[in-house]
Length: 167
Image 1 (tube, rainbow, N blue to C red):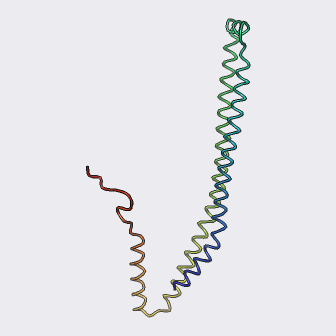
Image 2: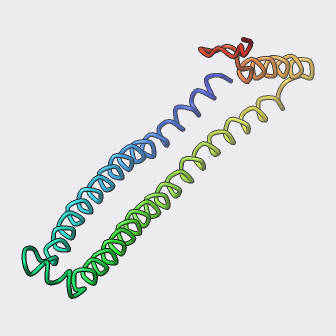
């Protein structure tokens, strides 16, 4: 039984390995894409800020613009453009993240399906092996499976953490 399950796990590992490698490559690619977008947006923001600042006149012409109200109009326009740029950059970042999440969901579905296939193979193997056994052997093995399962599912209370909340 253990050799059969080991063979199923080995086959499963062979099927899962490319998916896990794809996950690792995808993670690195996503980080690079987000970093590149952040750098591009930062450079664009700096350039646009310089362009907006250049619209404001200095010296006597700047003083004249303040007196005539032109300075306030340019400042209002700059604020609107800065706000629109901020919204645009946020939308680009959100679009990138949404696209990455959709790709990752598709990959995760493949990983989940591969794991379910492995578990179904193991369950089928157990069913086939149990059907060939005598009733007393079935009950003894069932007890062993339940005990092993119970031990694996039982989590130690104080595993590297102190849960003692008394003062």
